[in-house]
Image (cartoon, rainbow, N blue to C red; front, side):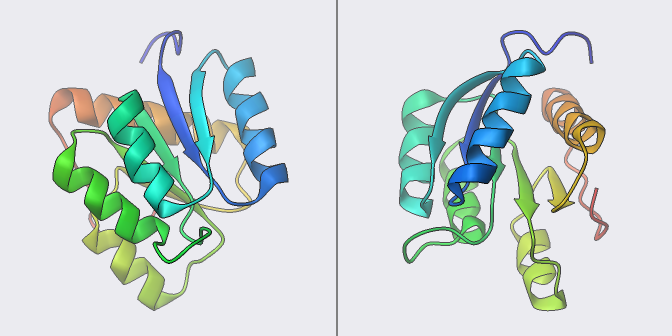
Length: 138
């Protein structure tokens, strides 16, 4: 994929420091951060309202709806790729994640290049109509 210019990303992250660091990295990389939210409900509402090109989704969020449930709602209503960014990699979480059919899954901490690659791969697959999460985290 070429330039990241004009790629609009919604960040869903409940840790303020992590959200700010993600926002800075994304902006420095040429992406447009259209919003930062900290709960599953906000993620669903803002994805519908803002129509981002991609959602970066944490799994553990504020409120009763976690990132997996929010992703399922988003994908049932909208055609927006979701990439998970999470500290959780236990078997049960991974099963739920894979069932929600994200376009990517990164385990924190990850480096800048891993994040760029996951974003670019998700956007490419989405544009090509491909969706391949065959059980392995990206």
